[in-house]
Image (tube, rainbow, N blue to C red):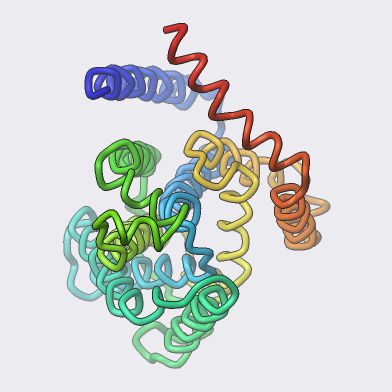
Length: 314
């Protein structure tokens, strides 16, 4: 099992290097213009957000709508440190991510006792509280937006963070900790009876998820020209959640594909951009209905058998 995991990680690393090389050639030759370079950077940021949320929502099974709040914490902490403390870009990203992780720890301890709709509502409220705080702080320039953040975010930085996020989440999921997290999702009572510390693993997954959301926020703040609080409202949290649900709860490759698709497709259909959130809502409702339908249940029952058959054939 361990050898297989190492082999898969090495294969993924080689693939990541090859993909980056292809993009680098496209940038240097002009095949990929500056507009699409910007879109690809947003793709990388959204991949980081979707994969990190999948750890808490997909693998842990805690449906949350506060991911944009953690992104906002990382974005503003990183931006303010760059503007006023003149710290190096990488250091601001790390501090912003740690700040988001710390906030995740503070709110995770009390709210993760809740389940279902209650947890969803509380995390949505947290998202709005963060946004309102940012709007009312003079140092953030309120709703007018923060102007003057250095444009330090590069495609390489975004790509590295996305790859690191995927690597960390994949490693956790396929480790002893990951198995414990998944067992908590499947049956908390049974997991507790087997000696698993439910509170610890809930908080662990939630904090790691928040930390990477903050890291994505730091990258975003050094990419966007004006950092405005409305970028981090509940619509952004819904957008990230749709990526996770559409890609498949607890499906890492699915989250990546959905993040890529839901970032690029709106860019191609600019004339329909005002209907984006309506489309996201329809997709989210359809995915949840399919999940609870007979067809969805039958499909989920078949997937483990197909995976087991592939492993036997290997």
